Length: 142
Image (cartoon, rainbow, N blue to C red; front, side, top):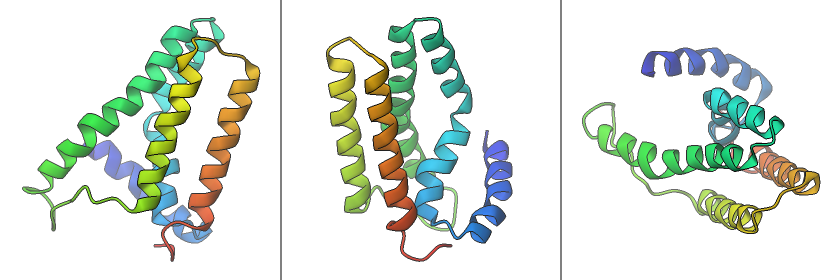
């Protein structure tokens, strides 16, 4: 996994520099989409087969796994590997995005129903957050 991640980052880095994208945008959106492509494909396949319960469980489970397991494990591993220890002191903007994500997920999944309009609304929120990270987050690119 680590080797694959290094290849992914090495392939993305020149493009992001050339496009002038910030590290925050690349980390929160580009790497997240590419890194979870298999899970996204499975969730979409299940949704197309009208298995919305499984599709939603895959999507939510992936996010919970990263938030509650991967980030703390990386913080602990950074104590032994790497030039400096990683802390879990996130900027207020990232914390706000996580809080909004939890609230929106609760609203969408809470009633147990879905339709195309909820999907369009979720894509709109994702687009708005993507634009905010692309233009506002991180200050100077790379």
